[in-house]
Image (cartoon, rainbow, N blue to C red; front, side):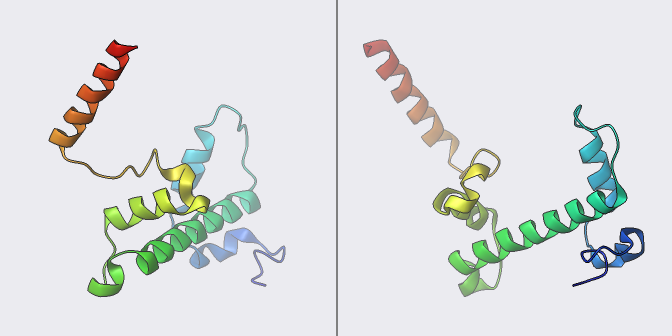
Length: 117
């Protein structure tokens, strides 16, 4: 295991993360439930977030159109969030893109159904 995960000094292992630790700290401190943040917890949260994003991107690439074009698109991420149970909690954050005209039609249908009830 890397020293930070095996209990080493997290402060010296900043080179092992790609996400800015200061930004993760800012996000963590935005929670009213958080009063102080341990450096080890900050490093592990940053690393876990990085690994999660990597897993989401790789899963989206493998299941999306990326295999053909060697790229990853928003629709690949949205499709993965919708189709994979592990990522289903992201459907509100990564909704599928729809045309405004399609949205307005579905909105009208919902209003008609509500009026019929």
